[in-house]
Length: 354
Image (cartoon, rainbow, N blue to C red; front, side, top):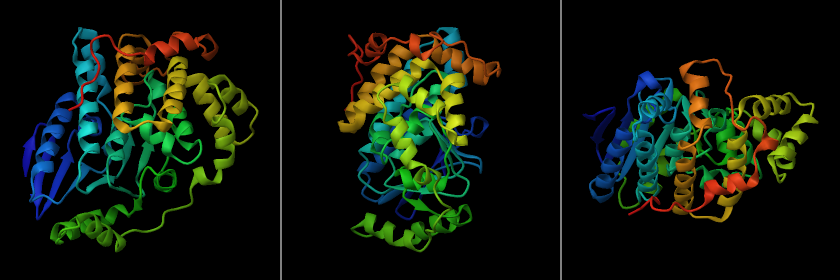
């Protein structure tokens, strides 16, 4: 096994194994990790001896909890350009993975959030387990659901993607399958056996078909889906035209999940982030992946020059008071004209994709 920074690489048979090992931060991504992964997958793409790749997280707590926000915050305080470097490298990595032409098997075991979800989106075979805890909680730290969310969340059934992107709701295996964010449920205890079966298999001339056949011997059916059970209400509420309308509709609901969601939107989430996210996800419905990443780069550039993102990190990770002082404080105070400015082209720093 070869180790480069916080990533382990190993080839077994014709399968490349990639392990994210940043356990002290729940396998959160750093800028260097993104660079190392991009270089490695570009090599794997060209290596005819490699038929497929597996990505997993080290330990038993997380696949990947997203970007290392504490490092981003510290860099911002010191005046470093690192926050911009991180997002540029992360987005370029996601495009590289999106273009990977071989089976990409991702074990979504444990926590999968933010940029970790962005990594998982790129898998051709996305495996969830009974420990999977998936969320896009970015509006709670003054960011927005990025890492390719503009492409993937609008393609969830109905308004499920909008619900997940705005509310940071945590979902498990069954809901990941229902929403299309994963495609296979396998108990965590069987992942090592599955991995060994893939290593020993001859994937032949059609590795996708060969991987599918192996998966059939391991996949099981998870518990019922919460999202499926509440889909009608989710579509009715989150299909509304504005964040204000969504909040008002939730206020009139009696179901516990609706009350919890209302509290998140009103008490926890950044008003600016909510309006950015709704605009972003509506826009992404008819776009290709590369254009979605380019748009997210535009948005995050404006976010990094603003207040709420670093205030959100402070309140959650630095001071831990969970009392962010958003600016503006209320959704009604966020002007649509201000939101549109996040989406406009950059003068001289557009994201260049090879």
